Amino acid sequence: MDDFHIRQGEWYCEQVPVSRLAKTYGTPLYVYSQNTILSHFFKIMHAFAAANPLICYSVKANSNLSILRLLAAQGAGLDIVSQGELIRGLEAGVTPERIVYAGVGKTETEIAAALRAGILMFNVESEPEARLLNQVAQRLRKTARVALRINPDVDAKTHQYITTGKKESKFGLSIPLAMGLFRAIRRMRHLKAVGVHMHIGSQITSSTPYIQAIQRLRKVVEDLRRAGFDIAYFNLGGGLGIIYNEERPQTADAFAQAVLPLITPLQCRLILEPGRFIVGNAGILITQVQYVKRGHVKSFAVVDAGMNDLIRPSLYNAYHQIVPVQGRPGRNTVLTDVVGPICESGDFLGHDRHLPKLNSGDLLAVRSAGAYGMAMASNYNSRVRAAEVMVSGARVRLIRRRETYADLLAPEKEAALK
Image 1 (cartoon, one colour):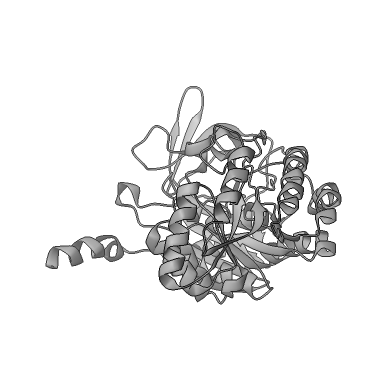
Image 2: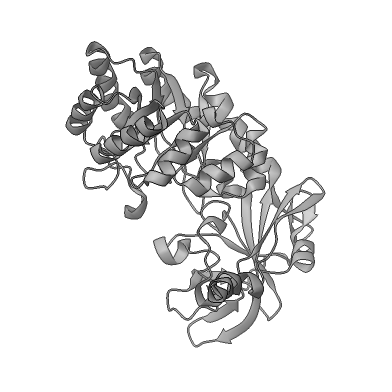
């Protein structure tokens, strides 16, 4: 699953003791295993190899430039949702022809930047977006390739905030509306419809919702081709789940075996947009205990990482395994809430955990934090964001320095000087 393991009572990332990383770089600290990132990327590549897929890593999961460069070197494309992600992708060396642009709120400026860059295609989510895209392409004397994001009205059986394929979702178009927009695009001289796109949610652990959605989109592709559209791409989206606690997600091989027989007969180029699957279990967040408050019912371990560093527990009530960095697990545990320093009752990393008796200075590792951890971090309570390191074997690289208070104040001080 990953390259974090216990050796003689101490957690290691690949060949490096985690405690050494905390001592060198401080806490809170995000630690990534390069081998885990690559092995998960290759798992999905090999599982779908028969379809020669374009794997477009979902940048929103973790947008660190070093991670993007690592994946770009293996031939990955990118799934982006903003101009900032486009800039990151190009800086990381991803060729524009391997970039697809999704999202419901693309601005005129963002569209123009992507057109100038020459990206592969836009995943269009509404008729107003298509019309704006056509206008911008006309002004720039470009032709924009588009796929329509179709909402198949399938329940992905995941958290309500990350379910995106139901009819009440803000994302995508219903099948009837999509068919109407395809016809309208024929009259937009600077757009070329080349594909269909779906993305039904995130942290999906079963292939069943995908099968249901693909079956509905297969008919759409067939109908479009009968109507004269050259549909060359089928974008399956992302959303493959990982293990946080007791989930039993499908493997990449099992997923491919379930969906390829449905897609292969369409003779479309398959696009996949994995994010969490690649980086989720490749990262941990290291935090240090500051205080331990002993209560009548349970203890509170107050740590130096908060919801500004990892918001998933507060936002989704998401579970992340929390383990002591040093010391062998014992039978004598204390019921403990692991909480942060933020002035919010919702600032916690874990409730009701059975942990060894903790003391100030102890280190804890919050596991499976590689996706939507640092990517969603903030400066709430005027806290500086954490550092990030990448481990490859015995080698360690700082891939994002810790912010300073000067970084925190700079935009406002610069504005005040104008």
